[in-house]
Length: 260
Image 1 (cartoon, rainbow, N blue to C red):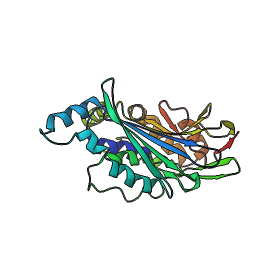
Image 2: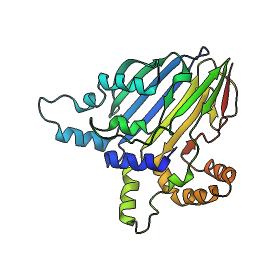
Image 3: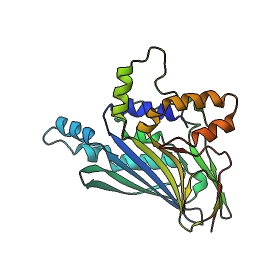
Image 4: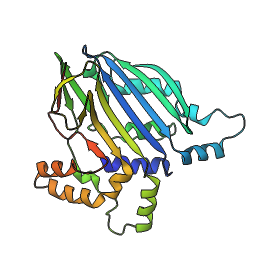
């Protein structure tokens, strides 16, 4: 997954501190069906800006961001047979956002992309990236055994601000702006996990993608070193990557989950 591109895309999309926390939870039933819940929390600075520019009599900007027709259009992107169920608006403890529910009949037809969290927040009519077709997580499921199909790990895409002539002031500003950004995708097995070789398993939950962007930026030197290592020893690069703080990405090409 192109982690650095995702982080920089978030920066370009919002340019605001603490602007986005997005968590996608896929729950799988033993028959291959399941649900998807996407929860997005907007940061205080973003909310303040939206309030500042809101005009009297205009629709609620948060509600507009999570319109039902937009959620229904997203269902088609998630895969054949995915259906929109409902949207729950979040307004609690000073946090605002939405929790969008979907259901699917067959996980084999499902595909998810962490970069969608960025596209979903773009203004209508904004151009989406065209090179995402190889960045989806997909699944192959039969007879109680699930294979997780992840995109090849590309450590070259994880360079964070090491370009020649990079402005240290701009880097510091980017770090501040992105400190609290977090994108997560996790799989929950409703009937329980009997066995799994996935990299990040806790109880009946498999974490496929969990990036705390601020921590990723703090470890840019380590990421650069890992990128260099990957050119000659991919296994060593993956082992070093697994030790980084605040970054969990499934890098195994043969991760499997056996359902109880």
